[in-house]
Amino acid sequence: MKFRTDINGLRAIAVMAVVLFHFNPSWVPGGFAGVDVFFVISGFLMTGLIFRGLENNNFSIINFYVARANRIIPALSVVCLALLVFGWFYITPLDYKAIGKHVASSIGFLSNIIYWSESGYFDASSHSKWLLHTWSLSVEWQFYMIYPVVLVLLKKCMSLTNIKRLLVVGTVVGFIFSVYATYRWPDMSYFFFPTRAWEMMMGGLAFLYPLQNLKETSKKYLEWVGIALILASYAFISKDNLWPGYLALIPVLGAYLVILANRSGSVITNNIVMQKVGLWSYSIYLWHWPVVVFGYYFEMQYWEWIGIPISVVLGFFSYKFIESIKFPALSSISFKSIATFKPLWMVVSLGLIGSILFVNITNKINAIPDINKYNMASKAEGFCFGSPGSGVSSVDYLTCQIGKKSNDPKILLFGDSFAGQYEPTLSILGKKNNIGILSITTNSCFPSFTKNFHYPKSHVGYSQCMLNRQFVEHNYKKFKLIFISGRWDEFFKDGHEYSNDTINMINEITKDGVKVVYLPNPTIFKRNIRNDYISSMIQGKSLSEDYLNKENNMVNNNYVKKVEMKLRLLSKHNDNFIYISKSELYKHDFFIRDSKLIPYSADGGHISILGAEELASEIINEKSKSKITNLLEQTSREKV
Image (cartoon, rainbow, N blue to C red; front, side, top):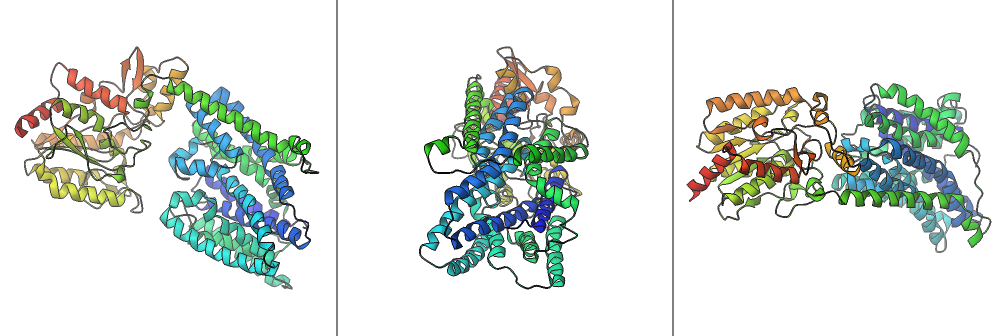
């Protein structure tokens, strides 16, 4: 196929949007749609290669795979190897463990499945994943593996004309399935091959059904409409939209029209800047995301102004010295030719190195005393709270009983995951005081009776939150004591101060004689303190008290103080509302065991199971009875 300058320029339009979005989403809110443009281009080129081979009866699936491997693997291998070397010296052991896992999955083209299992693409944690962007390469590779096999098999039983017609039907069906799946399983749909295949097949249709004998003026208008659609998706779509759904048709159709226009002399795509960026686009894409994560990891200020030029320079050198290497095709299918196939050895070597590093660091982590109780990812038997990373989704539960098993519990725990984190503590105290406690907690659901929700109502926890609030509103009179908690620094969003909703709820409950107890948040840190603790233990060190007490490690401290001041004031005028301050419950942000300083927090915010159990022990062993102990003992006596 003759080199298409328009497609090369289209690559530039795609990669520029992705890079700008990743460095600063406010610049190009829908820049992630550049990946969809890449998918269309890939589908066009691959369909062309396959159908020309089928028409000439000389298509080889093995040679097709080899050509794809020679194109994709060398540059990807260099990025993976660079991260492994860099991480050895500068990345904490826990994060380096993740790099090992992600290198193995990326070079094995399974990273889309791995990242889907870990979190959503737009989650905050994405900026700790150095190879997150390789999910799209995995999707493409999976397409490359399946697509030619299907076409070759179809050719054995039908004509090429009918295969083309079938691909039209398949593209339409694939789009409809993608729209349905996006609304049904949004995170999975973003990462999975079946919901993205139609985009690549759309590119294939541009090859199979080109527009013939178009006048130059018509081509120009077609190209302009296509580029307008792409730019509209970049400007008016954002990460708040479900993706890919029906909106993905906008950039996909735009790329399709630009390819159909086939304008080799376009001022938009065929200029020196777009052509150079287009040539370097694959390498720029490979390098830009690790550069983005570097800035986040080391908290670099104004990083986009430095990171973007670095990404382009790294992309240029990668293109010139790695992509430009012509790796030979397989001359024959034999042991010798396969054994000397360099990309295969790159995959095997990096896959093994990544896997070994992952297993080695995992073993070191598992050797840390009580690590399962410190690690929020472990499920503690008897506890059912759903804090992020616990492995248990709180939305699976409406109610959960802790403490002594009882048919008629008189104590309730109500709130979001920052209330749920106290389940281990209250369970121990409930058993000691021979009293049952009912817990009703859901992520992101601060204690209230309103329909207000400080996330979009499309959030997975919204429906369960409303059920929880309805349950408590209708049943709170059955309880003598209600513990509440929530993440107060998130109570100021979109001009609404949600803490007023909680105060109104407290007043409504307490006027009926039910006591309400406020449980404070531990310190919320900007970074995941768990990583620092585990890294220090692996290295045989201990975190310093000075490190934990750094003021700049804390998140939205002024917001927390504002809410707590209002609640403290409320307790002075409402005898049935008991305010417990952070200083009363936590003497420090850590406890000491075996001469090791252990943070209460396991993820920068929520306390760990180990920390919650330690907190219960401290409450029990206090010489002067705490407010919590007195309240539990009093409720236990009243119950009897």
